[in-house]
Image 1 (cartoon, each protein chain N blue to C red):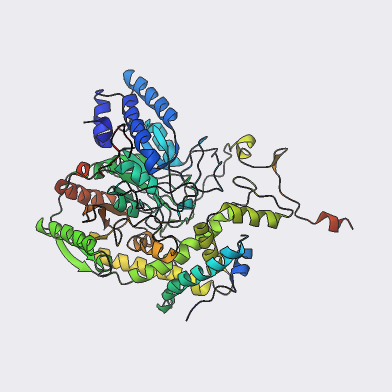
Image 2: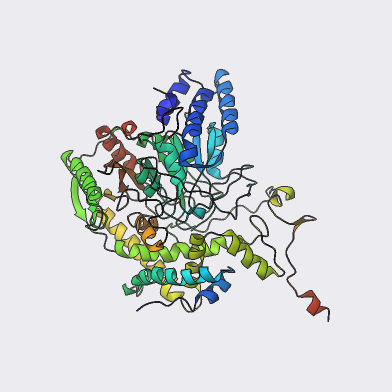
Length: 102
Length: 493
């Protein structure tokens, strides 16, 4: 059974917040179908009752002592942001202001 | 012998005996970089002035008879996905082209504390996603054995730097073969340590349950020196192993008698290049001749490893790379809404392989597909771990090819991602199981290219791998395994 990815590309690209050009979408649909077809082979294996491995280590959750420690100064934290503003990260409006002012 | 021709262990000895200065050593490697890197392109950001500063400081401290680390003054190259404070760290991506980390990775702190001059940050596949270093957003790196071929990847720049004596030692990272496969393509020794043995703090994340920092070196002993410096518990990495680390340099007594060795059937496959399999089988018979117990062993789930890996790694990547939205750091596009800005930033910033993996991962994690893809892949990972646990009850060491073929041509696999993924097929299950895995040179192919052999042991038995590597070095001097660069010194190619 082949996996047809062309219908999924727009949906998945939107979930991933990834804008793709039409040519990229077309190429990707074919390549992803191939890759997923190979990956799907794992579905042949019977995994009834098998616990999933999210991590290979048998370590307990690591907690540190609840004490204050110095963190990076604000100017270091902001040194890589393209749009610093008064000690904050600036982003486009989340709310549609024109709409909410009505 | 020129200084750049020495192993790191020998440089360490010469420096401690004050027969040479670190400034001289660094100059020797910088000269090599100046000659060869314009053709090979192993470095994204060379740091000659920083290297000379550190070298001069180390020389002064040594003059003052301060107690120094054995690697003090020995220079090193570092893959460009390991964070260096105040030095740009790009991951070979447009997204991080101008990113300057405000802090050091733990391993970088280790190198600095030891007084190791940093020669530069090395080229790689973007975000370590790839097997050829062709996915670098800046330029491909060339294989020094044949300039028309790839060096492997993703740690291609680090492998080339070591194989051509542009650096005596290098750090790389390995998620699904990214140290071992380029080590085999370039004819050097590449170690992926046990997951959790070397701190990942400051390694820019690709797939967190698989990513591991490791070494590219000329010899097992050089690897041991570097492991002594970087292995160990780190409170800043919650997946760091608490066990004490051994002295890895105690690896040069290569006794293989009685060692139970399994030749992995799937990794000497009939589908592989015949000479590659023959080289592995020849090495196996050499072990047998020295009274190791060698038998064939099957890891039947190896055939499913690729599928599980190409669901798990992209799933983790799609989540980890969610942070590149153009707000806090990295490339940023304009957009009238937050969503438009995020989507455009990511669409314009990422290269095609990174986009492919984000798409696969997002798909595998999305509602309706999660159970069939991601969850099933994690269960298969459990089965693979059980396979390894069972095999290690009867074997100390597993061996097989590091990659099905020697280095392939630049451009040969770029149009077919699946073919590219298959060049890591020998490396992936060790990554999924979290066990230590070492690629060592296994001879020269009739094409003139180096071949690699992968040695695998149970968790935390890196030292066994290094001992066996030392055994093979007795047979084949690693210093003789260097590409004959046609670029003559002072001349042009």
